[in-house]
Amino acid sequence: MARCTAPVRGHSSAAAAARCPVCRYKFRGYSGYSSSYPSYSSSRSSYSSSVGSRSSGSSRPRWSKSSSSVSYTPAQIQSLTPIREAVETGAALQPDLRDAFLCHAWGDRKGVAKDLHDLLEAAGVKVWFSEKDLGLGVPMMRAIDKGLANSRIGLVLVTPAMLERLPKESVADKELSALLAGNRLIPIVHNTSYEALRNVSPLLASRSGLDTSEDSMEDIVIKIAELVEI
Image 1 (cartoon, rainbow, N blue to C red):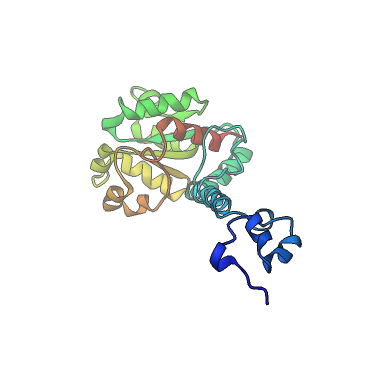
Image 2 (image 1 turned 120 degrees about the vertical axis):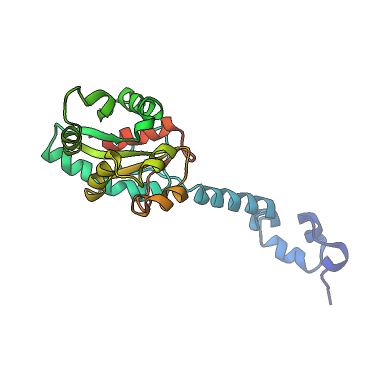
């Protein structure tokens, strides 16, 4: 009785299988081992590619153009989608609103807050910014209330200076209260962390936003510009 020679000679190739008195008949029924069974290396490569595409964790929200240079994480899409819906609703009812109200700590007004404002304006985002829009002799709280009421969304720049001010009764604290109540606030965390923010303001930290430890400030500006574009 013919016996398979694989235990002795091995079937490391189609030629070896063809010489085996048992397997050669099976071999003739196929176009070849290599075509019938994908190699381990090719399967592994395909699997790695598939896993890599799934684990990249980035996709594109419906309001971002296919030509956009930035990618979004699923968490960002989830947190920004309700704000986008509010932007679309507000644009239909009040088309003349400004795009964003920028809330920041007093200590950041001539530094990172101004840099963020300038980048947003350069990207076509119309921003209410105290250093520009709070005129001399104008009551501060009245101007802020008007700015909040006439802006589609609010941006809060969370920095170490903001964390220092939040526990105190300040203008920034009042701005945040109004923006949180309207459910249209995007925190932008810069040079700090959500953990540090949670220790100071758990309510604000519960709002997912954007973080310069994940995206550059330039990419964050692009995402905001896409979010408010109608």
